[in-house]
Image 1 (cartoon, rainbow, N blue to C red):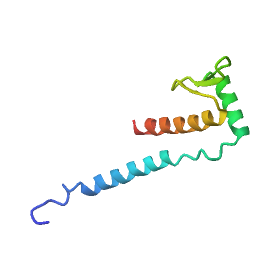
Image 2 (image 1 turned 60 degrees about the vertical axis):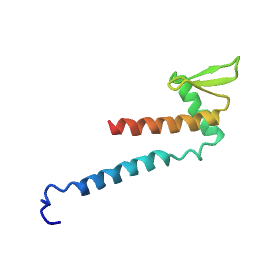
Image 3 (image 1 turned 90 degrees about the vertical axis):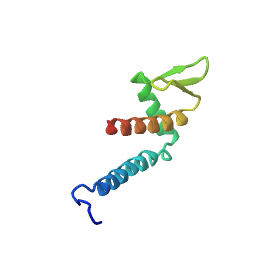
Length: 96
């Protein structure tokens, strides 16, 4: 590259930054939720109820995830959702 100063070339910095961002996205997307069996889901949801993160609504037979406002009729669905929600928030916090 004639006439350009190699010290002013930041293209490799940008490429490195882009690679790091893509790796973070892959990590967030790759949260493993397939290993949530019924016992694990029950334990997680019980802990979340105690921590006031989840509110059971017996008359509607649902569990409400308070931070997001989402309602679930299955402990497994709620556990998987909460894991993904937590992973997404952790990724957002790292980006700040």
